[in-house]
Image (cartoon, rainbow, N blue to C red):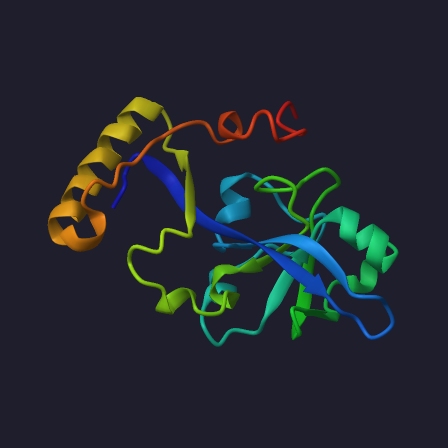
Length: 188
């Protein structure tokens, strides 16, 4: 348990294909995210709702949130998109929200689905390392303090799981700092 963080979230990016009956297929940059991701970023959809923990469980109804750019270009900024079923990678998905103009987390992504929607995630080996983790520091704590705590956690994991966690290190750095050159909205 990392007490240095108000919360932690995870994401994995992937290209996704939108196929609606009355439109040509379109490939978009997508991300599978934990249900806590947008709240950690202090972002909320401008239409509809955010992901809830119940959305991020196996067997839950498949849902997605659209970027404003996709909502406008593909769906004509129709406010009735919330609640409508679209097809993402061949699977029907209910749109539950639309994010604000310019929001493109983690880089330039246009569509988000809960991590539980990622086929095969639960079957990945411990050493797959495909999931990226981010967090919000707890009040009055520094990145150095959080890094010290994570170093202790990774040390314990390397003892408990030597086959997969030996020589694994953690690093705490500002999220936007990591992507400053690639991220046009980092000054917002």
